[in-house]
Length: 113
Length: 111
Image (cartoon, rainbow over all chains, first blue to last red; front, side, top):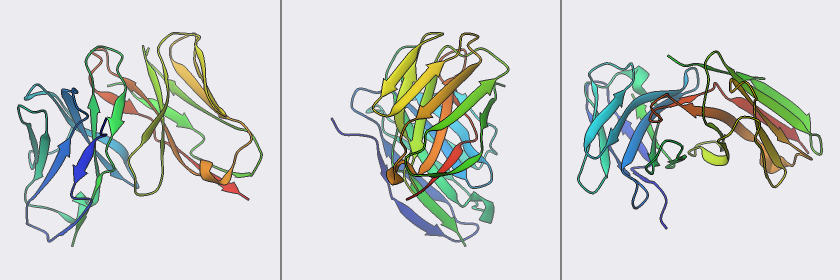
């Protein structure tokens, strides 16, 4: 069973640009969550999608958005990039039920210059 | 919202020593998850706990779900260099959807 796949692994963008990151969850998992990880702030929750609907949202500005497709693959988009958006972006997939574990991808390292 | 306080923030130990870290919350959790993250990689699930008082082992790792449901502990016995990394505790919100993470414990092992 394949794990969670995130693409690309590394990305360098310029301030003001936009970026789209992709996440393919474990087969059969319908929940996909996104996290931002920076050295100073730890793991910060961005949003969660379940069956193509955003189910939860963290405290991030509207420049951060996401979507989920019918095959459960998810994308997140960051517009008008700022230097502070440089981080490791992690995606996690979960199965159904209240007590299901989250499995993470390897992450996308975004550097904004 | 729910917050998890993880301690210690970092540990520097000698190979072969035992390690203990913990996570506390002001609110009740129904599930505790422990993850390990290697540099530049995503967190990997180590142990999942679902019942108050539960004690679960995974090789040299042992984790416990506190009786009050407000804390959890992770112990690593006879540490080895590959135990180096950041260990996170996590728990889902009341609806079981969003995971809240502790700040992490950075473990360094001296050979």
